[in-house]
Image (cartoon, rainbow over all chains, first blue to last red; front, side):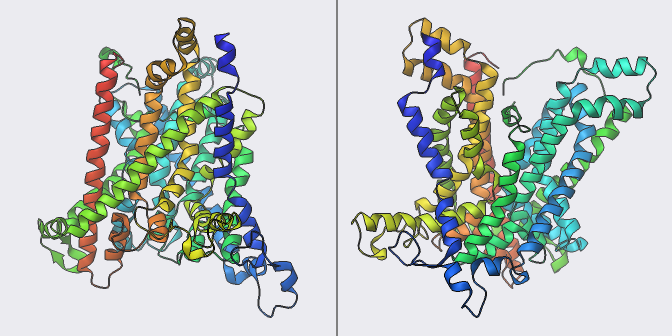
Length: 282
Length: 301
């Protein structure tokens, strides 16, 4: 009886889920409509003139014509966002994989303190890191370069990656590696034939999550990129920073949501809830 | 989370190989992150040889900042947005996680869909706030179609106002999925055994929630709220676009100082950032301390 009531939803819970979905997903409907609107005056709930009706007679590009044209820099920003995201994920993986192995298996003095230090970037305001690093990077000639942006993206991604990979290593039975060694495999063979294949699901989840964090970063890209590196978040920011939303801004907002939407479909099976068991403050 | 005390006899010094494996991570964390913190601190005390300024240690920037009432107004505004949106996020996320824990029909799909804000940039959330909450926005239009208002100007200013709900709405929109994930992760790890036992022993629903569920969820709640609060007080784009101008939140204020043609203001901006980091650090440390006392009282630490 008790367990049955723990497994079905109450009326209040159904209402809550509906309300939250309306709040999180609902606003995307007017965003799509706005991107297709030509004239949408207050207080109409739908546009009075649509983009398609006007696009043949308009002398200048409208909404989606503009978004898809090279002048809008949408393509450049998309390529930059994805390229930086991939580079950051790979670099982050290279840095965190060996370290996660040590953190999962070795027990050394100061390990707890090190683990806390590793979660600090999540607790220090991003603006502080961005502005301070801009100073150093300007001195090194790295501000406004891809290298600079990729390096700075490591700061908010490394804490997540190292956490996820440490958890993956902890779940990996060391016995398999030992068995392979006993059977005559060398270190390289153990790594490529045993460890990596077994770590693969976790590695993929970590890389996807890192990619996600990187593609959503605005502040660090904006500060370190110095306007010369355009990504989807910074492009959208420059479109809406005046505080008004036009049809083109709505179109760019939709394009900026696409990587996340694709990842959402992909990651449904890859990113498990357990990855979000953050555990700060041990 | 819960401390697992391992016997210290197992501790061994790291081998050279293990140290090498940790090296790249430490390089990034100490060199980049640690370096940024140290350099920021030095600059706020007047160390900027690249501008020809080297008056370290010069506390004038802090003195000037802290003696101006504007700073305290900005700090108050920053903390207000941080605290209110974190609390509001928790009030929604805890019951939401409990609802999603019951693996009902379609729960997986709905959970994935509700995760969308987590996957898109904050600026998309700001765009949605502009379209929904502005004076000419959808809510305003709905109010007009219901006959509540007859002019866009009659709609209450949610955006571009102080203490308004626009910025908070964006933070909550973005962070509810994150908090829900973190809390759901703890719930799934716990199982329902203790709660079922409490119910069998005759506890009422609200008793189970306040005495069993909520204390068990504390590790997830604390982690998620720490991260969200720290992010909210350090965020720039939402208060920059949706805020009401002077007084501005501290990150926006620092950015204004930083973009000033007079480079001495950059050091002033650094003092703003260091003050913000200090205040949020003290709050986070106090929160963690209180949480650890709570866990120790319950015998979990």
